Amino acid sequence: MKKAYLILQNGQVFEGTRFGAEGEITAELVFTTGMTGYIETLTDPSYHGQIVVQTFPLIGNYGIIPEDFESEAPKLSAYIVREPCDEPSNFRCAGALDEYLKKAGIIGLYGVDTRALTKIIREYGVMNASVLSEIPENLEEYTKKLAAKELSSDVFAVTCKEPYVINEGGKPHVVLWDFGYKGAMAKKLVDRGCRVTVMPATSSADEILSKKPDGILLSNGPGDPAAYTKIINNLQKVLEAKLPMFGICLGHQLLALAKGAKSTKLKYGHRGANQPVRDRRSGKLYITSQNHGYAIVPETLPQSAVMSFENVNDGTCEGIHYNDMPAFSVQYHPEACCGPRDNEYLFDEFLSMIGGGGNAAE
Image (cartoon, rainbow, N blue to C red; front, side, top):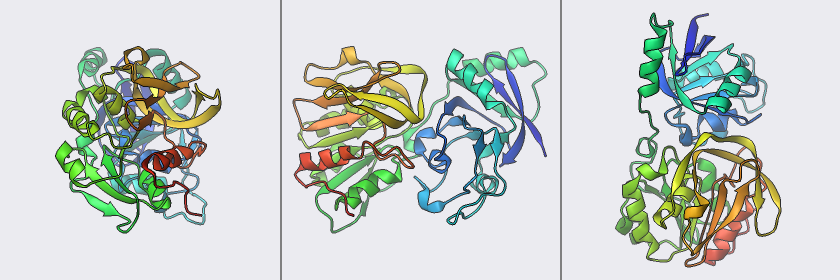
């Protein structure tokens, strides 16, 4: 067993044991609180460019199940767990976590006190970190340079390269604008009978509109929404068509920015399957799955927009309805796999807005 070290930009060092692929990496350090769903976490493109810490202590107990992948391969930079399971048990299991990470080229580290590590991130916020084979001789100098590094996730590294269609004969026709979408989003639309055209993040407004969609779904994805100025400019042109539109996570943020709102970076983000959200219209509470490090500033919303959902923990914006066009968005994941599934009804609302029904196939 080979040792490795997680070096934080604040100078703290965690020793662990390697699993998965070997190597060294520097990236942003974040944590996620899901008790299950590690397969979906590993394959969620929104984690591109991040070292992910699982707060739940035992990871890998039901193995790797390809049918549950959200994308073809992991996009995260490294994976930190307290204890990996070497002998998974599940009738769908197609291999163990260690083997999967090795094949995917993802660095892993276990035996780390993930509880202590999570407390540090909650106190100081997300930070830069490195996985190294040796502790640097001049640790203070190394961490100064580490803290100064500008690291970022990238939509263009995880979007599709060319448009493609899912469920060719379906109706209505929805364009899924791919900023790093999770596969469950397309599945929820197909389950409701839709034809789905997946379009790259690089698509122009003309290219999007040339597909003649009945509605547009703006997907999740990684990174700072304000950095994607070209996407925002194209989105503003698409908005002129007044097509029904549904934004999720990064898509929610990009839609708000295109309408003139501002975004801000959260201290340590919302990542996990237990985020409480309140519907401000009905007062109903939902437990939601989330994965984001930025939020829309409610005070900057245009007069045509209303904040429809709020995070119970910190009051941040979790959803917006627009009164000047058929559009709404949520910061959380209504398609969440492996749950919670309380908010799948939003896909039905989107389809009703289009005029295509919206009842999922049994």
